[in-house]
Length: 135
Image (cartoon, rainbow, N blue to C red; front, side, top):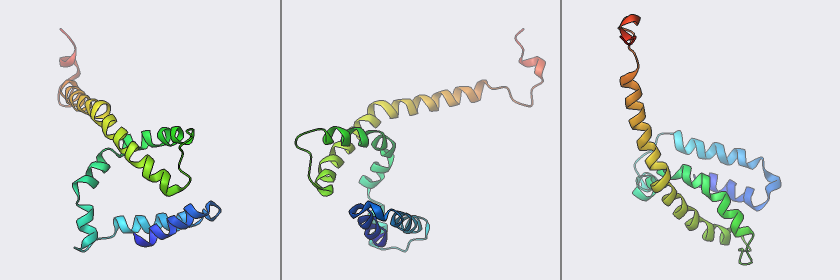
C-alpha cells in the first residue's frame, strides 16, 4: 500500500505520467487481495470509522465532484492539492453521511421489503399453472 501511495503521488505531481496510475492501481489491488498477516495494517483495516466510510462510499462518490466543483468556483479555493483535500474531504464525508442516512438507507430498507414481497408472491415451479390463475 505504501508503494502504491508513492506511485499515486507521482501521478498527482505530473499527470503526463499517467501510465504510473496503472502501476499504482496494481499495487493497491495486490495489497487488497493478498492474504494479510496480523499487524498494524490489519488493525487499521478493522477500524469502525474506516468501515463506516466503506458503507457511505457510494454517497461519497456521488457528492465529491459537485463539492469540488463548488469549491473551485469560489474566491477561497485552495492553491494546492493538499489544501483542496483538507477542505473538500470533511465536506464530502459529511454530505455523504447525511445523504446515506436520509436518502440511501431508507431506499435500501424498501428494497429489502419489496424483495421479500416479490419472493412470496412469485409462483413456484412446483405448483401447476392452472392453480395460480384467479378463480
